Length: 510
Image (cartoon, rainbow, N blue to C red; front, side, top):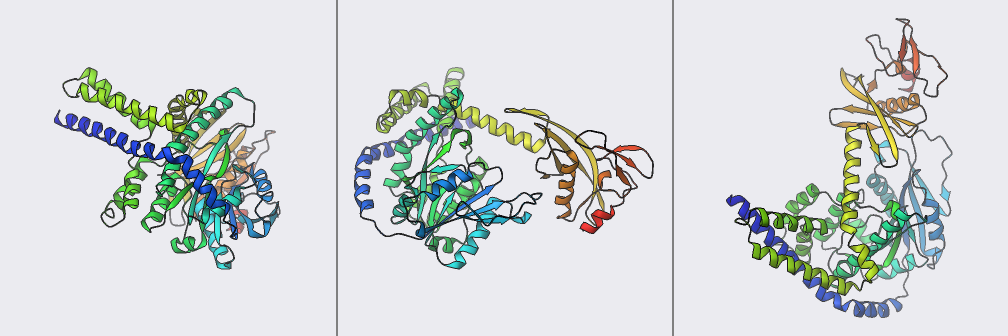
């Protein structure tokens, strides 16, 4: 029981320290209006213009890319001072003509499977553009963002004060759909609250801010010094932010560099706990040798979000009632008053209206729901189980198959997935997953997985790839039936047997 008592004491101390830490920010937030007044004067006298390069990573799934490119074409920033480059992930089966330019943007088609990840594609393009030595800064945008006409003008002015600028975001909705209107109200209230209670205050203190891969800018000298950018996911952004800080490069939040995002595309994900712990342990040894700014940024990793605070306090209240001999009721009551007092101060300095405060109170519930959906989606994707996704039905069947790596045969599994009338295949071997794109026919999905495995030196030994197989059209779209020319029996395209021999067509491809 001593262990539990110690844990409870540490948890109470942790929450008290969190409250005190927040109070420093709330006190500083009283000067936000003065901060804007000073910055407006400074920004108005900045007339130098940097040559900017806007980099966007996109794929065929990004339907709002054209809208963003149109917005970038209508900037108040002179066109001669910026170029737009798109690292475009082209589908492997897309045989359409490669376009070099779309709506004034230079298109770089990424077709090598080794560079299909966002970081690899962007850094490959970045290396190429750096060699041209004509850009003074790079701006990174996600294709699901929307920008105003003064976006690049604000980026240029913000970079005059900081070499790495992280932008702000607001949410919007396009459809008059009640659930989306409610969701937008909740997110908008939360963004306003965090903006005035945390984000702007960090800029006032000149403290580092976590990189937002969908909206940030960095000068070319910093890119050359670091040698890369990390914007693949939340963990990559966090790691890159800390790498910048460890090199005495501060990424400053700018409330002027604004992007808008549709509530349907709003990202509720956050860095993983494992990623935070690994980074904290990695940089912890540097705390003694770095300045106070870096120390704060590292310790900031351990700052709990609103869900953790609420959950932790509810746990304390529960044990305070059920096991009062282990948890001090007085301390828990004082902590509760302290937390509530903190919240009241934060609401005051955030200058929220009553309607905004009403929606803000729903944010923890909204966040829990979205986190559960993210967790469920990730779990489903990894296990390829039969389940119901949000707004779509997914059915799958698992087939035991055999593959050859050039040296020996080994067992594997094929998940044949039907998703909203589309088909895809998933190759599983141990902890390795390889997934195809979606096709109308399972026959084409199996062709795709065969090709992807072939690029890795693996032959998938299924009937569809066998020399002794003949397809037998059965009037259906999938074309699943065939005939074995050795046994003269009817088979399915994904079956396999001991008589497998690679077809002549496949041999020619190799």
